[in-house]
Length: 315
Image 1 (cartoon, one colour):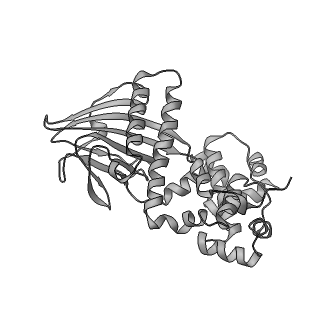
Image 2 (image 1 turned 45 degrees about the vertical axis):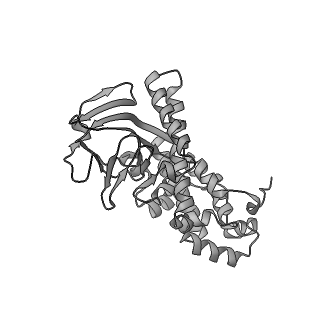
Image 3 (image 1 turned 30 degrees about the horizontal axis):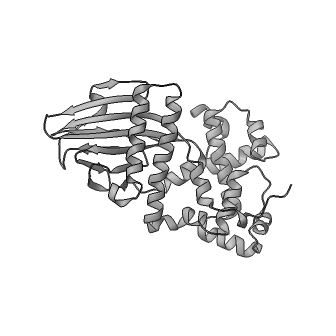
């Protein structure tokens, strides 16, 4: 059965955002009284968020300087970078791991810290992305994304979502973890959407290519069916472009040729699968459209730098 031409497919960027399914690492409420300061550790492959529900807070991420957050502000630290939350610039900090915390559930805790002065309350969370499309998108985000309540018409909605997450975590009703994770999906996606709408940098490179009416749907087709025997000719035909025009436009927007992108995308999927599933290399090769395990292994080592078996053992 023939796939409909990709140029008829709508919202390729939306399809990429749809793949931003995540797993929660932890959520918590932090109750601070000035003066206070905490140092959050590096958290690889995670996006951390902080939502201020009361009082001011100073956020400082290495390499970006610092900025004030006020009640109603949401800040994302997309790359798991270590950072500081304090009652003001230059305040003395204590490592998060050195502070006592009240464990409410396996995923939710309450932290109380400070010197007894004016209060600040922050809902914090860390979520992890596993899908290759999610990793690709997260890798393009800036070091910090700040969404102020006054900056977005969704401010009240974000506030309600965070409060719902906190309520679910404390009540521990059946299915609560699933509800929390899905709400976090929506929350982080909304913040990323706000950044994409506001920042010109989101209209260049891979993100810009996703929004291109010809190249974006072609990328989406690769994402949806990476095992399909795509060729430059078939992708160009589906985009209703000549082969040469498609190749030039794809490379100009994405930064690499279409077939190189296809191979790299397959290898990112292979990485995730090797880390999470007990699948034979032959079955994985078949799943990704390779005719033999040897051909798959050569491609994996060329793109990732190590053989697939070694990658699995390492991770």
